[in-house]
Length: 116
Length: 116
Image 1 (cartoon, helix red, strand yellow):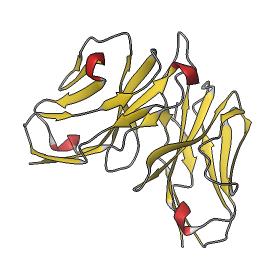
Image 2 (spheres, one colour; image 1 turned 90 degrees about the vertical axis):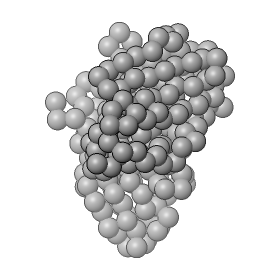
Image 3 (cartoon, chains in turn blue, green; image 1 turned 45 degrees about the vertical axis):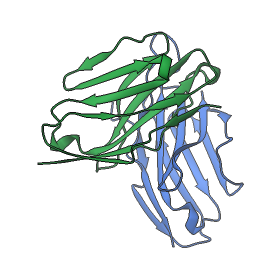
């Protein structure tokens, strides 16, 4: 398997624009996570899905952020409108849920977002 | 509430030195997992180890070893005979039974610099 695939790797956008980050989890994994990494706040969980259903979105900072998982192989994180303080590295991760075959979270390479 | 503390922000060592990275956690759950991840300069997060709360046996993997002590709520990581390639940011993380062990709470990380 190619691992968790995120696109784009880098995104530079102007304040006020809509930004969409994409993630393809590892095939067969039933959990998908979106994390954000900043110098100030470190690594924080934004939202996670189980079997395409959002389970916990308490980490989503504002209504400007939304995430979807229309199917088991694709998820998006959208910021609309974007602001400079949204600049961060956004990681997507996937895992196989707790059980005999449970796996740890595998992370993608991240999307570095810069909002100017 | 769960919390992970990595008090060492940055550690600098010379190659071949041994180095220990500290991790202290807080949780009210009696069943939980602890993790270590490595983030090299390239930016991805690489899983190193997972340990459950009922297994206090120390683990050794090559030059890496982990010491889990429930009495002090610590899960420390030692690199023996450090190498330049060990230079990275290392994160300790915790997940609890009440989230199905899926929600990772990360510490702020320790940056390790190994010089030749």
